[in-house]
Image (cartoon, rainbow, N blue to C red; front, side, top):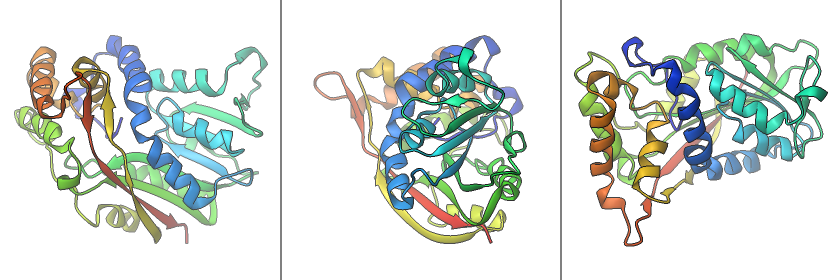
Length: 288
């Protein structure tokens, strides 16, 4: 998702929907953050010396991009369906993979995709020197609450001085998608404390870093427009993020889809495509 957060217990989607949602994420939504991934990897000169741990790796596109640069990548996620898709991308030949994984396409190093939290990725023999959390925070209330424990668990797996990358939404006035997320927040207000929209704050990422005991060491902003072939694709892509789960639980799927489609009207172009300019921010922090 563009923001992955721990869902409210009442907002979790039905298990039967998980594969379809994961596929929508992988095929429609995930690519919207490619400029962010590229900017981070360029900034940190990711290459053959990089040992990367991706927290909440989703369906693995960011890991694949790092692997094609020669990085040794490990991804963890608590979504079975997304991990399965990540394995399809990075482990294309299951018969050839051993206990530790398999060489990903274009990668010169071993790739691992694991279900669970950071503890599942421990590798005492070769600590990580880069940890990424590409789920942007700063969109819903408490969306960083699950990230801080994950970072705290990941830090002991990385070497001292290693980089940790945090990402967040830019200012609301520079993120067209903000108006659509407000719809989710309004519908979710029927569930106390679940999925409430809030504007991104300037120091969101620094606060997360401080809570995780990390030292900020540079930041940047990246343009990541959301572009879709049509309104239906936009609705499917946005709902795959999980940001609308609380809204669905508070009302129903059809109502949320209708409300989101209406909120997208200002961004539908003459040819029927949907285009929403957005800006994201990343923070590089160091492990003391």
